[in-house]
Length: 359
Picture 1 (cartoon, one colour):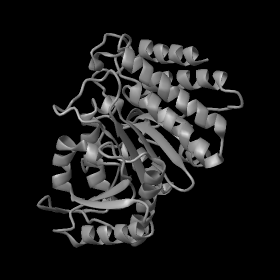
Picture 2 (cartoon, helix red, strand yellow; picture 1 turned 90 degrees about the horizontal axis):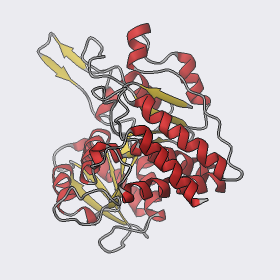
Picture 3 (cartoon, rainbow, N blue to C red; picture 1 turned 135 degrees about the vertical axis):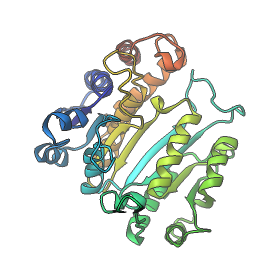
């Protein structure tokens, strides 16, 4: 299932699907069928509904969802919320996509953002369906004078996302600093009881994984450590809002959101999308960086491969990842945000060519 969405969404989705089509041709035994549906702010403007029920039903029935970019800054509900939540949050909450997985790594050919130049390779796991965002449509606004939203932390939700984090740590090679496998809980347990509760449940899960070390960091300190010592981290887990913030900061440390792939997954469903927005200022000009979208497509195949024990899907994911890194490393066919002059389409064609070079 593909939801190209708004702004640059259709452009980067076209590139991702071209890459996907080519890897299907190259990997024996891989069969992928993609149905595209219209959802997003432009549809809301024309029909009043960002995602009709039939599109949601199609997403629910799909093996996985590939999303381009949803939302436009001026497409908002009367209370000020952007309508992108009608799609993204509906899918996250209704399909229980409770874990937002944001890999962060130094990429070849991409200039270091941080002066220290320390190697970066960690994963932010964001709790997706609770936290402060759980009250997204349930807050109060009293006479335009007092507004409140309530944070929601449950033992079950915290346990599930913590288990995902420890599971990822088991499969990874540890933190760049010294190879130690570690899960870091980011919270504000020194101030708010809700975060102290989040930490206590995290620790219960950590007790069950004695082969993985645990760590705790307050969120304000974490934003400093992400800049000063990013090589100290392997897997990081956080409540919804904190995970949202630190994952974007993490992306900035390795070159920006244009390089940031992401997955929203649960036990039964998975949605994959770049972490960046719809960039309406460059929409339709073939200028967008397709890297995050292409790497999200690789994550989709990897997730399907793990889920269904499908070696062809796993091979295809690895091929897309390697081809994308090759294009970045060469730096001759990259978009302007990476210091090049290539169009979105041309960079996508270069990734396809790099795939062909693997054959």
